Length: 312
Image 1 (tube, rainbow, N blue to C red):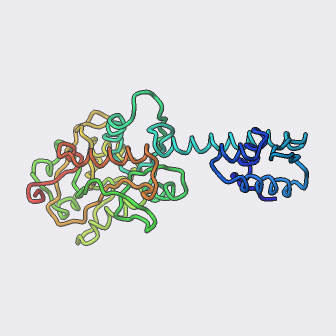
Image 2 (cartoon, rainbow, N blue to C red):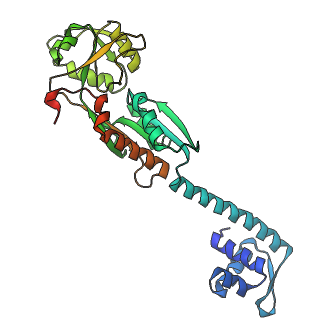
Image 3 (cartoon, rainbow, N blue to C red):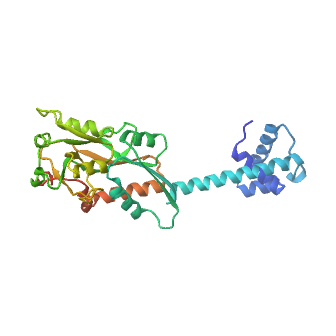
């Protein structure tokens, strides 16, 4: 059995009017199309659902009235779904699910969301911290509406807008000998114990920056969160290499840390926002636009650490 929504609409309209011609006029179609739809519905159920009278009047049978009532409910549900779908497409409301890898996303993500979301409480946020790969997988399988991630290792199926390029820098305790310099080199960093961010992609990237040094650096600790890494550095367990920095110079342990640019020519990392570009919901597009606008503002470039030789 297969009936189109059009056939159901024509049938219920005819039953409601009790007249094929009036139904055709209401629908702005030919009377023959209404008559054909009635035939299709009766054939699908193998029942007589209306009796045709002279002057093209019709009378629904008991079965016809039952079928028409069920069609009406089905068509109402369909129209409601289409309205809700239009709301999803155009309204700035609903649920926004964001997966983020950027280690300092808490420093800027709440500000971006506050600037772009309505204050009426019609948007519910779900924010998940994840590694770079699981963020991308979550976007592909529909877990997330948008992701903040490092796009240098983006999967081919991921569409994204780059936001900011972040060069590597050295994180140091405030009183460290290297903190007295304006810039440091990889060779100097390698002479001190290291605290390494132990996240997928991150640890490999940071090890890669040091692999050409004559002597392998001593790894003092691995930490899988940026704040734990910063706290270890602040307490003097070692130095670290990162790409993005928060706006404060203290750690959870109240120790002071500083960032120093690295003078060597090193590959940076690019933070991007990934989303379904073909037909994004209005809410998603508003969020993406807010991310792009935020990082286009030079005042927000303080999440990166550069020295004068890198600035344009």
